[in-house]
Image (cartoon, rainbow over all chains, first blue to last red; front, top):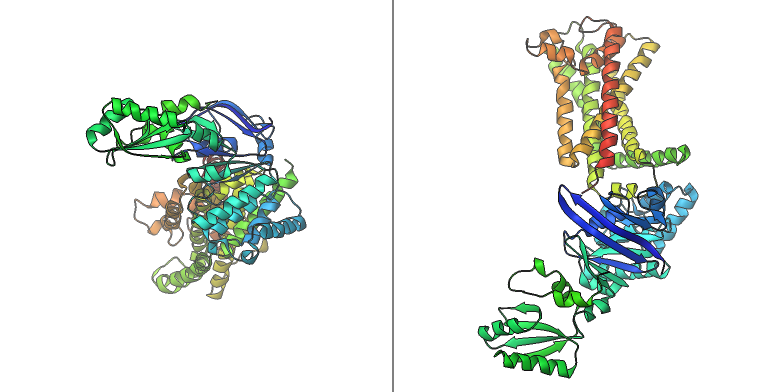
Length: 325
Length: 259
């Protein structure tokens, strides 16, 4: 499979603090790849390294066929970066922003104007073309930002938290736009802390936590790593709840609600076994329900160290099944 | 990357910075009002009480030019810092463009803004009775001095803006640069200052710049030194500031990234 990004052993520290620890990343050409992780996981740093803005302390990478360290200019010619804050000029109009960026990409003046008009139409900004960006809504700014990113037909588009701060409708709209871009063959590497976003958009998801990739796969693979079904058990009293925690592999537990969630393969036999096991341990479940695991469950299971005592989780179970390479 | 591309990138960046200057009516209006108000203030309100050996307007014009250039440089520091704290510089940097063009855009816009303010000082000065005696060559030399000084201040401001990285902090540059002229021969001759301040005024870089202009326009300096002597010092100071600030700004630009 051809890869647009192939990074090996990327390591970076800032002021003695290790931000990225031997990260390997392979983004298949033409796919949407999501780097999912909580704040401070190192997502933005990784993107900035791959976009030639920050030099890694160690590691190598090929981006769009160019060596990151030996040929940063080649990389820059093939990529486009949309950062966390819409990188457009507030004081200029939408049309002026696009024309300026097109000129900076060395399109002749007339071509630059034509391309700007084309993109304004494509990204549904024609009505606002002559207005200063300062007056744009968050969603419009993001769309303009994406339009700017598309001027030079980049092979790889970096989107750093593309929908941060957008209302649900603008978010849906932006997702549609990103899908359209992927459909015409652009490889997209996006970072997000929204599980729904990764679930909705990405072909492949890599979970970044404390500078390491702790899991990767499709959304379905990640969910399947917790078993086919999540069984939610509720207990009548605190004593039974504690005994139950002692004998099952919990994905998630809530002391206040006396609830424990366990991943199973979804077969009737496994649920019967589980309930029998609890009976034997003197922790009979008062109520039982089952459901499909969400990406949230995977996220919670794998980033357990950051959670509080009320939500004790075990990540070993999940990690066993997810290929970490 | 060819020179043609570098020139084209720089042209685009200059257009951007000039446009931004024009679209901030508040700052633009202040920059244009300042020379007029200061000229009237110094000539009609303070001027009557100040004895500089002749009409006060004949004395004060170079000082006001330097003061306005200080204000203009502060604006540049803020503009550079604003750019650095927004995401747009990251985008510019991730594009295959000449990095130096971004700063060059700011510097050229700064030069344009400051030359406009200087022209206003000169225009209003002539209107209120300033009578320079310089020959055309003298005027040309004075113009050269002004351009060199503005360029040095602009690069210094750009470096400061890059260093502090926030518009609020960059604003401090305006204050400092507008204060320094008071400790020079801008508004009163050094000999009238308190004893402790005299060496400060006599030896700081703004003084020879001011005295060079004064000498070229009026035929004599306020320090008693020859125009040539002051000009040599002034050009030397400007060159040192220019080179140091240029190096610092270039280094900072490469090593600073937006938050």
